[in-house]
Structures are given as structure tokens and as C-alpha cells.
Image (cartoon, rainbow over all chains, first blue to last red; front, side):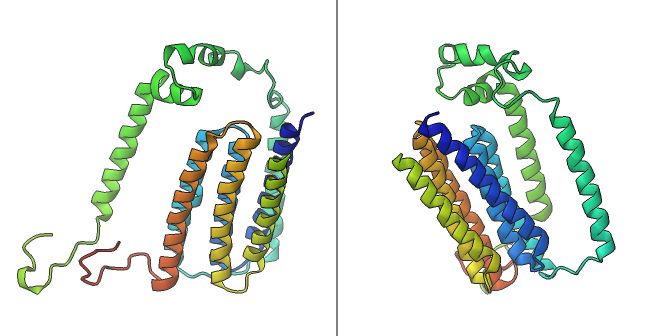
Length: 192
Length: 96
């Protein structure tokens, strides 16, 4: 085993350990500002883990949405409400732990059916992936296969997604609006 | 080997920043911890790119640095004004 593989394995473990510590702390801490800060750390670590697992585009989304946008939204929520969390009665905590353990067990049971990580015979590597990996350089000419798939093979799909997001952004801006610039007294009310 | 040592150093520093975020007595320790954490994950991604022989990850790391900046601005705005909808108070520069 060479040093690169050991390093990336150890990095995966370190990332998961940091995420675990952060998750437990989020569950324990009552100061919600600290929780928002810790969830930012959690998202950054998650994005790093996705990079190590070679899911660069997912990592990008996680960093933009998890660490960027949701931190801003959570801070906005804190500005409107309180930043202290009320204590939960112990009986409810026990029920919650029970439900979480049950779901965790179900997810672990479900993961037994999945192919091993990196298994070349997994169904996902048998369908269209060989064609993309083998011929996208000649057909599209981009070094990153994911970019070729998103921008060319699934170009219409990506364009549709962009339309949807653009429409959503226009709708939100129309509903919420932007703070209007106040004109100074003399020509007030002429434009907005 | 050197990249592995650098990655180990970054991970140890991350753990120290995480401790500060966990026990940090006041808000400023935590803001600084998250900021440091963002910078460290940028470094970790860059180092990992070299470990893996794909230095193209540097571009990704730079975008992370930009995203990290937005969160820090929002947090400092909240701490300063205690309000995310802080108006421009007639300042011609708007809410920039």
C-alpha cells in the first residue's frame, strides 16, 4: 500500500471523527449561536469529505449551500428569535434516541444490499459510465468527465435546472424585494 | 511523505480550532474558530490535491475561500447590528 492511499484513508477517518465530535456537540450545546457556528464547521468538513471521495460537484454544493447560504439563513433566524434553546424533558429525549437508533439500524440494514465502495462490478459502473469515461475526451474534449456529462450529455437537463433556479430567484426577489434606496429630501418620491 | 505530514499538521490544527469552537467562552472565539476552520479546510483540499496528484483541486479551494468569506460577513453583520435587515441609513453606498 503506498503512502497516497494511506494518507487519503487517514484523512477520511480524521474528517469523519471531526464531523462526529461536531455533531455530538451540536446536540449538547444550548447556545444556538454556537450551534450555527458548529454546523458551519460540520458542512465544511462534509465538503472536504466529498472532495476526498472524489464527488467534487457535490462538495461544491455542500460548501455553497451548507457552509454559505444556510449559515446566513440560520443567523437571520437567530436575529428574529432567541439564541437560547429550551431544555427538552428527559422522557422526550429517550423517545428521540429510540427512534434515531431504529432508523440508524434500518439504514445500516439497507446498506448491506449496496455494492462495496469502489467495486468495479457495481451496477452504477456498468450502465453508461464506461462510455463516458472512455469516449468523452474524444466526443466533448473536457478533462473532467463530470463537467462533460453536466454540460453536454445532459445539457438540456442542466439548462432546465438553470431556468428553474432563475425563476425561483426572480420570484423570491419579487416577493421579498430589496431595500429601496431613500432619496435625500429634495427629490423624494420621484423614483424607487 | 511531506504532503502527508502537512495534512497531519492541518488536521491537528483543525482539532485545536474545533476545541476553541466547542468551549469558546464568547461569540468572538467561535467566529474566529469557524473562520480558521474554513481556511484550514481550504488548505486541506489543496494539500489533498497534491497528495492525490491532481493539483487542479486548487481552483476548488479558492472558491471555498470565497464562500467562507460570505458566511463570516453575515455573522459579523449579525453581531454588529443584531439584525440581518439592517438598512442603509441614507448612505449612498447602500447596504454594501
